[in-house]
Amino acid sequence: MPQPMSFFRLWQCILQFTLILWIIRVVVAMTVLGLLILGLAPQAQDLFVEFADAPVWRMILFVCVMVVVWAMPTHYAARLLLDTDERFRQLCVAQWQPEHARFLEVTARWMPRVLGLLTFVAVLIAIWRSHLNLPILDSTPDQTAVIDEANRSLAMLAALVVLAAAGFMLYVVKRNRSADLPVLRGVKRLNERLVPLWRSISPGLADAPGSEEEAGRDLGRLLLATIFVAFVAFFVFGAGFAALMFPRATAVPFILGGWLPFCRILPAPVGSCVLPSSSASSC
Image 1 (cartoon, helix red, strand yellow):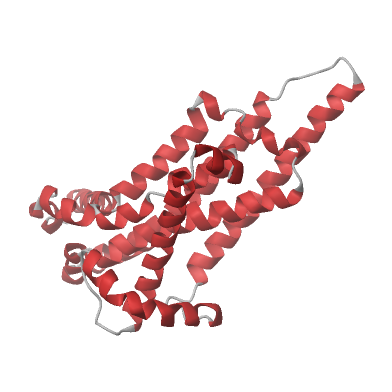
Image 2 (cartoon, rainbow, N blue to C red):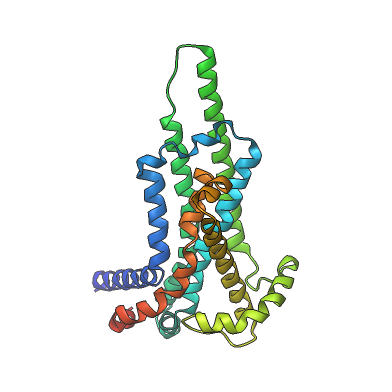
């Protein structure tokens, strides 16, 4: 008897995990796409060699762009989809077995964090590929010194990415979920004027009007919308202007993170039509 029960519980966890992946499927797809591009595409095998002779401020700029434009929107888009999916919230409330409820809660909390962390993993893989792509020169000390300097620069960039990943995880775990920070209070007050817009274009479960939860999520929606507007604006001025502002590696976060606002708008209504209700109820 214990063995069938164990298998049943495992199967329930698999169903619940699959449901979570389905709800955030577009965010998962974009993250996997980033891993594939930076980890396998031939065009990316020397992507970060451009930082071999770059000043430190350019490395810091890249890391900041990556966090703000790719990692944070990835985390927040997935978090927002799970928080506002009505059937998923109903499923969480309807759980009568404590272990299943706990599994849903922990998985829903950590999947957005893991997806955000995977953006750093993708960049580290690309940095390692750039290191492997450097030529091995034994002819003259000057040539070997150039390669050694390039490897040091790549190592410094990798260290900055690791530090940013640690800071990202610390933030998403310890952050103030009400976004009640001095630097954000003014933005939240200004964002109150856009509340009707956010309510009209945000599908899924709505927060209580005027609540702190609504204000916090609207702030995230403003972040996603701002990133998308900046993403479109750069390319409206032409590919040459975009390449000048964000050359090669720095453009990757914009390309992979600039579309994430659509992850919040499209999947909810589509998912409610495609995912059979029996799949959710069976969890």
